[in-house]
Amino acid sequence: MSGLFALLDDVAAIAKVAAASLDDMAGQAAKAGAKAAGVVIDDAAVTPQYIEGFDASRELPIVWRITKGSIRNKILILLPLALLLSSFAPWVVTPLLMLGGAYLSFEGAEKVLQKFLHHEEKQTKGETAPSDPAHLEETKVKGAIKTDFILSAEIMTISLAAIPESNIWMEAIVLASVGLGITALVYGSVALIVKSDDVGLHMARKGRLRATRALGRKIVVAMPTFMKWLTIIGTAAMLWVGGSIIIHGLDKLGWVWPWESIEKLALAVGEWSERLGGLLEWTVEATIFGIFGLAFGALLIPITTKGIVPLWTAVAGLFRR
Image 1: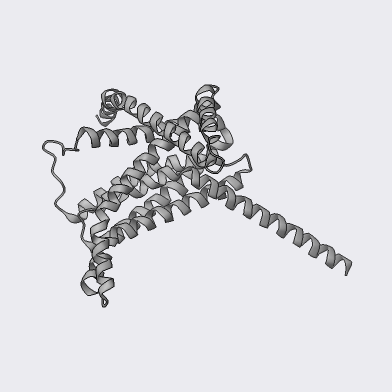
Image 2: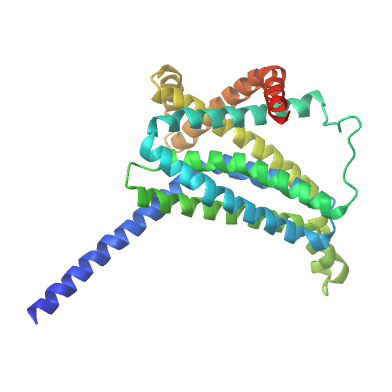
């Protein structure tokens, strides 16, 4: 009988350890996901552009196809790569993270400059859009999955850097949880966004109550403004996260004065108010990170467009021959 009680005690102890591990993994996944918030917002803002122009009956199937591609990107490709880097080359994580921060800063700065300089994307001369809807859908889906791969790589790298040192199984579970959770959040939101017009139109036309019809009309009218603000917030988040990643990366590589200076300034501003101190500190940090991200991204635009892109095109052309 005593052996049975001892066994039950052991089972209870194992259960407590397992529960603590699950809590730990859930907490780490939540923190890692929060670090990737800027990329998530931008992903949700960018993806609806790939569904524009299609018949309403194809919108959700297209979102589902992109979702499956995103899961493949994160779980089958990026997760194993992240675990390999963590196990055999952890020193690469910070430079990769900074490279991703540079990409976010570049993308954010490009969007800001296009907005204020009124540069609109023009179709290449002689290039015509595919007339076959099936071919167009295939092209759009592939483009969305490629864009998702870049954003997913940044999400997984940010998440990996946010996980405290632990065993490979813990890292795998946390990264998989973050990847699947963010995918569900982003593409669930995208599905709601792209169908909001249809839902609002249906409510406006066939709602039984006057209030329902009025709400439907408001949804239809509000969606363009909502999408505009989502894009603005996504761009601001990209610049904030991109600048933050680069400055924290410099700090880890030994160049500590930028982050120390920002931290001292934020603490000094936070001391002005006892109640709002934390909010003021965050606002100062986020503002400086965003300004730095914008300036750094603007600096990268001519380097990328005049140097990196032509060089990459030339090298790629040699391999095609």
